[in-house]
Length: 611
Ligand SMILES: [Zn+2]
Image 1 (cartoon, protein in one colour):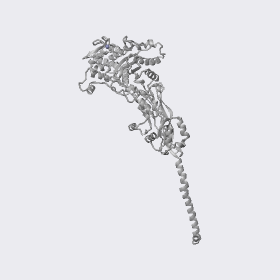
Image 2 (cartoon, rainbow, N blue to C red):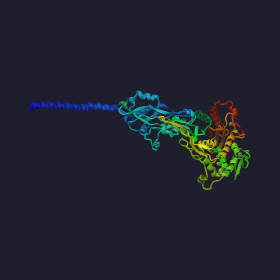
Image 3 (cartoon, rainbow, N blue to C red):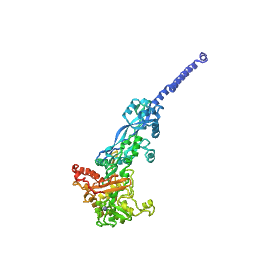
Image 4 (cartoon, rainbow, N blue to C red):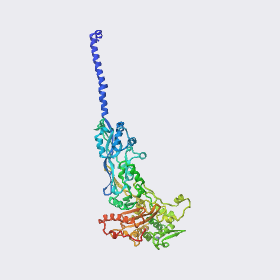
């Protein structure tokens, strides 16, 4: 150093000192930047993790026509995992123990539902508050695990309303491929059946987004100020045409029997007032992930609780559709109001087969109205032969059978209205007998209807032939105050003249009011009621018991259709059951108490009057 100093002059010496100082300064700066500040910056970037969190909107509330709740939401917690924050050998293992879900399941759900590695991926919904408390207290044990408040659907179980509420669940890959909504991703909740499915896009609302800041160890710092929140739009609320009181009356009426369905409608506009399928299921079980054992139990139940009987149950309608044959006969000039056929001797001989009437002792000679009143099969057989298969089938078609009602609910069946084309296809050309019309004309054979189709037909009978499209939604109210009121739509008009309608309505009346009416036990002093019994033979055991009713007759405002599977005669099972439902509706409307002497006035069991 000294030798070097001596070799330079004073000026050089000063320059050297300056350079050395500069070098030291630069070196210090470099060290500071490279070592000290790097550590600090690195630490900061580790600390300030930003998570993108979806704001799940409140799903719309569904109420009945009087504002009573049918579907609501309840608060619950969902546990999720942020994939980028998972610590190997810790996160998933500890979480598995906490939520009792094996590690393979958790990994599978993360893989399936992941939107991005920085976003929480739902692993289990509807976790208990104890689990939340543990996650809160022992957060270090669960790196990358978060929980979120999420609303869960709550269905009013007392109503037995699954046929139209449906339920929600996580979207499947298959569904996701069919829906064109960018917002949906695996793990999203969507409507799976019923109103929840049909109106999913309005009920669901629109997701929002927020950004939150957390520490490296997973503690929440707060909302991240660098990006602004996109708020969620709540889902629309829906008002149904359902009357909850009537719905409960229908559900309770069926629960002493094994299986069946009831539909109540307002014939003046097509509004569905009540609809039930029995046995049903608890839609609430689908709100969280349903245990496999429970799912298997429901699926394998031989009483088919998952079958939506009003919309998808296919039944022979039995005598409830005799109006169609009689109406067709009158329109086609095959019969007149008072024309008669060969008397009923307890049945009718056709070829080498004797087709029985339900009344073995026979009805004698009847006209059209008395045929409906007493439900004589012999008259109908002769009428059917005069009409022929295709003419009868045309009238069934024109009365709404064999095609969907276009109700505002998903998954409806079309039914079956056979004609010669159908039989040729099924049995081969001319390999069947025209005697099949004898079955079709009394609502048997291959004719199959859904309870909703039959309800729609009775609406037409009650409403001077004008048939409205059945619907269940009355009003949709969006969160921005906009609303849609659903207007009634005329679907078609029954193919009957005014005079024919008068005769059919007289038949409807006589079933209850007539001396020999098959449902005369429903006659009472408080209101008028008309109807038609049906006893449908079927290949699955005992006869199905049907009844369709209209009340009050002078100005109909309700029709009720009930089928009780394998329960026997319509007059003995379904008729009193429907009578009870109409009574609860009419008494409430008239402001009267249920009469204490109702067993005397309306429930007199008749011996020998069946069908
Ligand atoms: Zn008869």
